[in-house]
Structure formats: structure tokens, C-alpha cells
Amino acid sequence: MSVSIVTQTCVRPERAGDFARWQGETSTFISNFPGFLEQRLMPPKPPLQVDWVILQRFANLEAARAWLASSERQTRIEGAAPMLVGRDDVHIVQDETEGIKPSPASVVISTRVLPGKEAEYRVWERKIAAAQSKAPGLQGYRFEPPVPGVQEDFVAILRFDNEANLQAWLNSPVRKNLIEEATPLTEEFHTRMARTGFDQWFQDSAGAGGAPLPVWKMDMLVLLMLYPIVFLFGIFVGTPLFSNVLGLSFAVSLFLGNIVSVGLTGFLVPWVAGRFGWWLQPAPGEEVRSGILGAAIILALYAAMVFIFWRLF
Image (tube, rainbow, N blue to C red; front, side, top):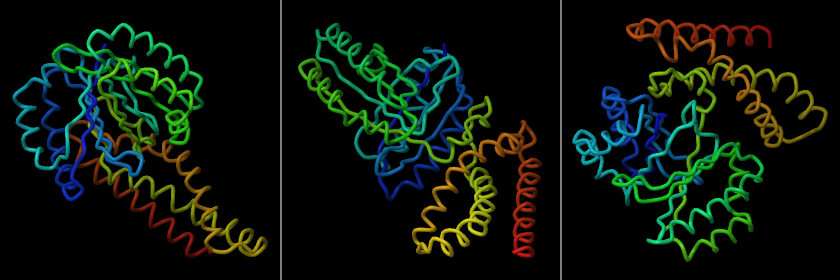
């Protein structure tokens, strides 16, 4: 079974651009490391997620350990040290059959258990697992014990369908009571969030190589769907119904229109991404040709929509 290294790190705000470039270089570097399968990068999404989250998948535990202990990784980390604040959280977890796929709202919980209390902590973990299984919106839960020589913490990863349900569980009286119950067993406990943005819409389009999808390509496809949705909704619903019939102010009308636009965009973008999979993840050796062709097609679609809407409306 493959394993993933989950790294969460806090970057100095003024160095965010430098860190993104450094991580891009690291992605290229690690792609040639034995046993490497895939990498996913999730930038901060304040206020809920303030950390950068990096998921690196390897074919097996031995390959993951080799990367963690490698001189190559140590050299990369030393280069990033001036950009970071505090310590990194680095954990190894076993993947599910299809690999770890972050949900729109995920949380990584690290717990350092007091020596000699491990058995009691495992009993407590089964209790909180049973309680959270009833939480609305829970999509997945993984619990990993320490890996000798690699990580000292027990790690739990919870995945929810949205932030509201995640926060509802984290702030629930049931969970707070259980956390207090575990206090005599733990030395250190902390929670770090991980959220996805547009990339959540493109997960099914990510290739087996695991290279992160180019942000500019995802942005172009989002705009390809968002522009006609916003325009047509405004023409056929926003102006005639919200403004003329209901007399709503522009601010209220725009807000309601955005709710509909975001919902429809989230539904249509995965569909159009599937049609442009050849462009998002081009075949080896076809990167330049497919990149130019795909961008040209989308730009032509932009121009066609603008011309048609301009002439008809």
C-alpha cells in the first residue's frame, strides 16, 4: 500500500512568493526520486487554514522514509528555512486504495502521548472515532500510530464535505468533552487545517504522474464557465426579476447572483475539465504543442462568447 507524507508549514507572509517558487522547484526535484508517485500542494486559505500543506505520495513506506532521511531533502529544507516560521509538522500516513484525496475541508490532528499511556490512548481514540462517525458531512477518517524513527505523534486526518460541518464537529460539546477526557494521557496536542480551492474541481483531471495542475490553466477554465453563467443570469434573472420586479438593490441582487454562479460553476468546471484533460495533463513530449493549442482554443471561445453576447444583447 502506498503512503503519503503530509507536511504542514507556516511561511512568512512576505516570503509567500519565494516559497511557492521554491516548492515548484522541489516538485521537479522530487519527481525523479525512487518510489515517488504524486505531489499535491495546497496554499493557505485564511482564516481557517493559515499553513501551506504538501502531500507527497510514495509507493511504499521504505521509499517515503528514504526521502525523509535523504541528503537531497535536507539540502532543500535548509534553503527554505529563512522563509518559515516555527516548526514543520511532518507525518506519514497509509493511503486508501485510491490514495489520499483531500476534501474541501480537512484537518490534521497531531497528538504526542505520554510514555506508558499508549494503550489507554488507543481506547480513547476508538471512543472519539465512534462519536465523530455520527458527525454530519464526515467523508473520511484515518488514524495512524507513531512510526519509530520517523514521527513521534499519533496522527488523525478527518475529511468533511464543507467547512461548516468541519467546524461544527470541532466545536461540538461532544468533542470538547472527549478532548478534556484525553488530557491526562497527552503531552502535546494541536490541530492544523487543510482546504482546497479551485483544484478540488480538477481532481479527476489530475494525471497519474501527480504533477500539480498549472494554476493559469485552471483559472482559464473557471473563467470559461463563469463568464457565460454570470452574464446570462444577469440578463435573464438578475435585471428583469431581482431588479425590475422585486426591486432589490444592486448589492443584494449581485449577492444572490453570486450564490447561483458559484454553484453552477462548481458543477460545470469538472465537466469541462474532463474535456480538456489532454491540455491540463499533456502527454510527455506534447507539453508545448498541446499548451499552445489548448490556450488558443479557450481564447477563441472567450472571443466568440464576447462577440455573440455583444451582438445579441
